[in-house]
Image: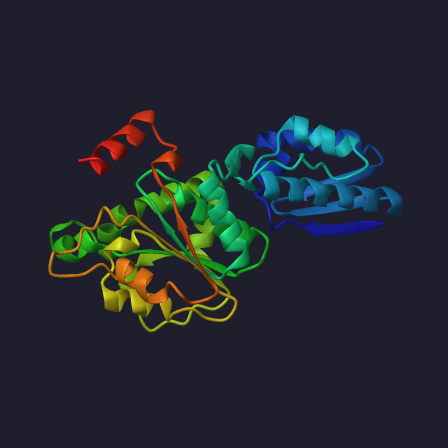
Amino acid sequence: MEKAFHIEAIDPIELFGIKNTKLDIIKKAFPNIKLIVRGNDITIIGDELYTCNFENKLKQLISFFNKYNRLSNEDIIQILNSDNNIEKNDIDNFILYGNHGKPIKALTKNQEQMVQCCEKHDLVFALGPAGSGKTYTAIALAVRALKNKEVKKIILSRPAVEAGERLGFLPGDLKDKIDPYLQPLYDALNDMIPLKKLEHYLTEGIIQIAPLAFMRGRTLNDAFVILDEAQNTTNPQMKMFLTRMGINAKFIITGDTTQIDLPKTNDSGLIKSLEILKNIKGICFVKLNATDIVRHKLVKKIVKAYDNK
């Protein structure tokens, strides 16, 4: 029999290797069938039993890559020689596998609480100092939800406070002016999603990164939405953002109330929202602190020194 298989969920180079080095390994494991590969299309020719077996293994290879973001020669051999899908042992506090199979997980008790709150609540506030992992953990949870098809898109936003004052003096178009303020969000995504797939997600609008002002007038359905640096929102901005919440949406608001960059005449919308929303059921508040800092060991000491000043 002859069967066609179209590959969508993985770059053919990742599956078949440069100069088909991985494809050669796969072919050796299935000497009773003939494989014809043209770009994203593969034709399988052979006995029905062998053909179906190969298709099953091919799906396992693709599934493994989508889960672990890697597919080495050793991985391929192990999957082809196994009767079942290859699954790694569960890791404590595990969130997802990042690029090159790197496990991303909650590293502290408060980060664990943040993960648990997100699993049980649709609106989570995560407050903590620089380096406490609040933004990174939030983005990891969003990427996991997208991979698990719990949502259709991820929306990441920040109030570009400095950009609002100086955009006209920065070179380039609007995207060039805004991107420097959103770079920390890109950095986290680059850790978790292969470059080509991330570019596809950004191009197709599956992942959107934009300043807070771009949220006005939208209803965000089937989305995992993160507002980062929320301490720099004004009261009207915070109300505007919170009321964007649509059907099957999950919101995480992160911020550090000790690093407010707003003009002194403006109150922080984050601080005000904590007071207004504190008694509403269904909203979870997580407080991270210096013990959660996972950057260079000096960062923890610096934060403590400023707190004690």
